[in-house]
Image (tube, rainbow, N blue to C red):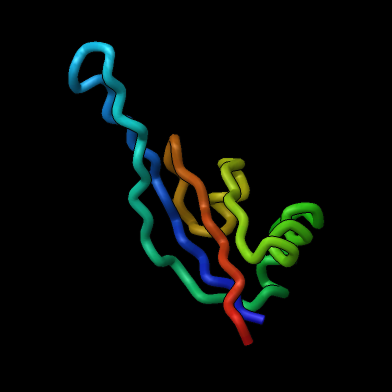
Length: 85
């Protein structure tokens, strides 16, 4: 099975108007398309189980983000999405 890897950085915009808040947003880039076995070799079993069960998972542990994307930036995460056969 193939897994699509996206690298995302979350940005906050703060209060534009007093007492009104704008939700943070993420900018994501397509990083790679890899085999499930590759991802399995890098991530803990519970994350892999969630990925298989739900079809997608968000990984925010900075060490794991760096392993999957090669990048290390504050407020970043990797989104993994299982692709249908």
